[in-house]
Length: 425
Image (cartoon, rainbow, N blue to C red):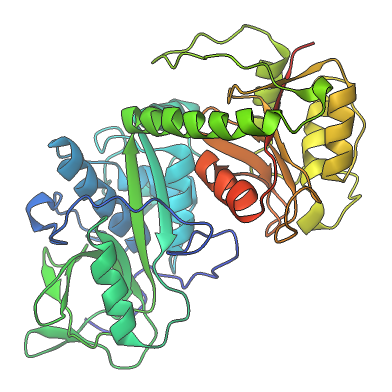
């Protein structure tokens, strides 16, 4: 094959991207201690036939997810490449694999049978935009699985260190890797010095330190040379919904214990009500409650810049964002400083301090209350075990914290209190 672009566009790794070992990082769950995923490889599906899709980032990422689900559940799925290709909006010469993974994380997947491969490229690139029927079907996948993904390294020049990190991460998942396609010497695929131009799934590293990849061309498994220049690699974390509930229940227990101790240090008018909240499989929401409306409003703003007044710089706009969203549900002043925000909440009888990590509740760790190593922050709990808040990197409202991550940053590192409040009336 000639050295063309097969669909990989080099990403720009921004501070909101998860990276192995950083503050924003996916859980390290050893799924496969051997690091060899060969027995769970998915059905081969080509990214090109009579036409070239430039869709390797879609094909390669789906191959990873299908392999993981096969290993975890014992059932081999087959998801529609055409669906996620059009959700992302991929066009020649290709796309950034991070964006593909993010679109899967937020939009879910649908079966191959729902949107199969087509005879013409024009038909393959439909529907665009994706229809409500298929969007709703994708959301059903999100009721079963929770996906996280992270870069394994960024700007790491030492190939041997990259290889060691990939060996570690193959215990957690197969990997999405950027490679140079495809120059073969003595049965191995080598780098010739051009930039990576293809994205595929790495499923093992052998005793000779050669990476084996499952490719979306040639019906082939390819063996890369030990010094192949893999410049980008991403690993994945997949939870079933039952695992998500178990983790959320455990995180709630730990955070409640921390908050109970802290409650004795808070002013009497903000001491939370201590209560046991049973965790059920299908909690019944309070219909039309203000906290439900706040949750709906917060979720509707995901991916948007909600700070219309621009009172604070992007990196300090968390309170401005939260108060703008609250103000869409009930009248509330727009402000910019976490201690002032917490004081206002304490004075307002519509907000009740609680230990309940219920979706729609407000979470605050105020600046100036800890050891000064981190700034305070404010957010709103969502219904997927995460916390929505303003991203200092993008200036947009994102589900950018887990409960564990919030505790690690603001309580463990920053030694700050964590206050949760519910909008009740």
